[in-house]
Length: 194
Image 1 (cartoon, helix red, strand yellow):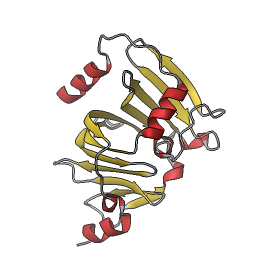
Image 2 (cartoon, one colour):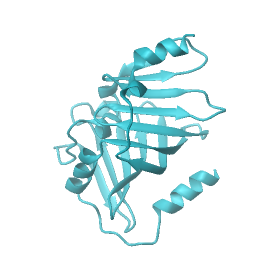
Image 3 (spheres, one colour):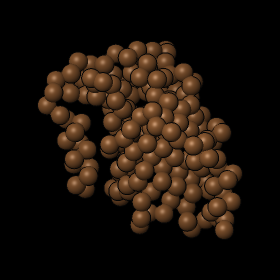
Image 4 (cartoon, one colour):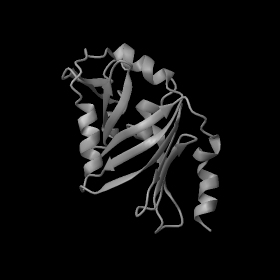
């Protein structure tokens, strides 16, 4: 809980900032190639997990959960795989059926018609709510950005089936070396089945 409060405090820093434009946010996401850092996840049931996130755009992200959680969530090859220690096989589904696809797209264009359903600022952060305009029934993602320089700080994914997940990004470094093997679902399946 302490980490969440610290992260929320960072999001509400007193420095005033102008509302970031959709174009500035799209440019930032398109320029974001790799990143690594800590995250805190708040699940819909109120449980909290922490871990390390690896990002390699387009299309790849990996969430390694710290103990006592022994799960792994990764996206690669157009798929999302959820590894649970209670199962030999991960739960898999297409990345394009998740709101996370919006962040991981090769070319992010938040100005596309019907993509953004909310765009506001409280003077310290800009919040953008977006959905796939072709598949709004797959849910939406609410992204929180700070400016100067632009940085993604948090997102909330609502899959419209009652599952709401908040990911708060801690200190993370952009432009780092992130090996492709971290996003190989087939390779990871072999490790988990041992």
